Image (tube, helix red, strand yellow):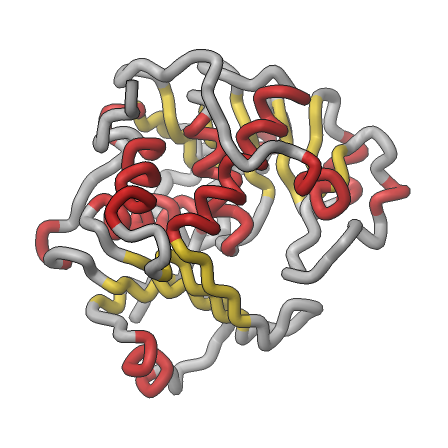
Length: 259
């Protein structure tokens, strides 16, 4: 049985069915660091492939499913999005921090302990991965990474860049979430599966939405855009001269934080 459109997995399935080759996620990194200057574009088919591999890793290696919490100790990034969708595909709960990242939570998760204390931790920090008591996945943010350069500092963690490709391109969940199950925890506030996909009526059909900001806000906005058969352009950095880029990308809605 296919997932309802109101669930994140159903949103992804509909995008693949409606137009698998259309870009659904475009990433620009204008910030400092090893990924500066990157532009990544994922069609619905390619995004679903990343999601399937990550979901298979979560289900097969970490026995993740409904009731499991998956902490995303990552910035708002294209990799964060497929890990969130993978978590929702297995029916587990995404946990993010809304402290100091400009997202919409109330900040009650003051020290980020809820993220780091999740059953499964997905992080780009070798120290966090090494210190986690349960299953941990160490993520390399650069697009062409083949292994994490500091994976040796977290020997118990899965090196995503090295191991994700070994997992299957198709995913079948062992069990599905109920609408009342918790899909997202941010700043100590729970959002149920039946409430996490909220379309933005003012965006119109098939919007091309520019996003930047905290991970919670980006996840919610991405689901809203995708549920309207749209796509997102996610940017990182402090550049303000983005009008030409957004015009060339066909952006119809600028939903960046503080834009």
